[in-house]
Image 1: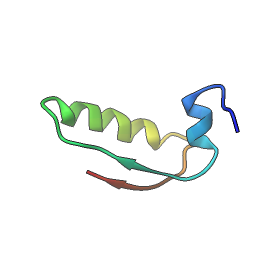
Image 2: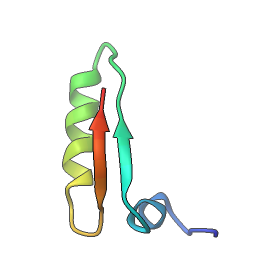
Image 3: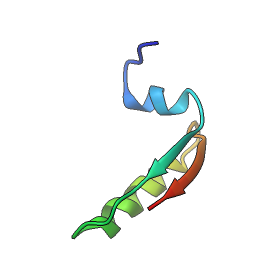
Image 4: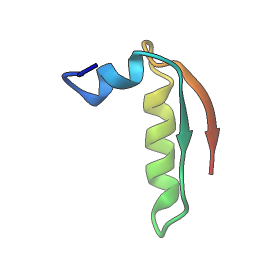
Length: 48
């Protein structure tokens, strides 16, 4: 199935968010976690 955006793809079904460490990883991880908690996203789990 094709999706018009990553948002549509992630909202289609639960997903697991895997994050890796990096120099500015904390800031990127905070932004990703905050975005994935918005209505329409069904995060199944997190790791990293």
